[in-house]
Image (cartoon, rainbow, N blue to C red; front, side):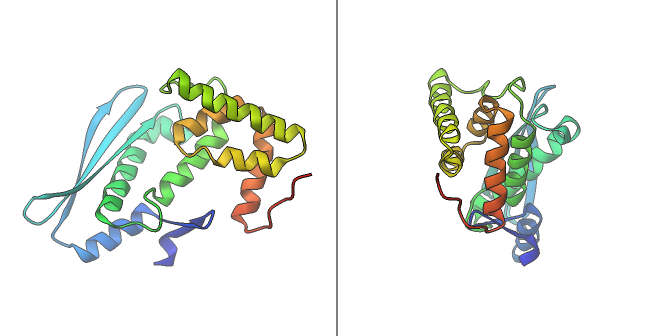
Length: 198
């Protein structure tokens, strides 16, 4: 079981593979059905449904993947969206760690943060008000880094939790600011002590 468990920031995430294996062992007569809700050259939206042995719907999960979000999504956006939808449907049914998102989704979000650039269309689906809030956070992050308070900057960065918001924030930071945040993220993932503000 531990092979499919990932801890990030002290929270436990289960891989979709582990969720499916556990589900199959518990409910061998139930099924997972997936369907394409929307697909075009830019985005894929998938839906996963969990049905019991009588065909009664027990849970659903949806997932959206942008083809431009990462190198993998250029060729496998549909597969990634399907995996995430299945993971979310199983989480809705109760197959999760301490978090609803799967380890796969978190890993994908981290990968996207590493590849996003200001010209990648980040924030296209956000409202102007949402963009302003994130832009204000970006200014605070920049100020804290200038002050030498990288931990404060990192704390602000991780306070943004929605994926689209994160991608937009990432696009507003320069390479040095992103590098500082990534460095602290890696340190925290390794369990290193928090840096002190200068």
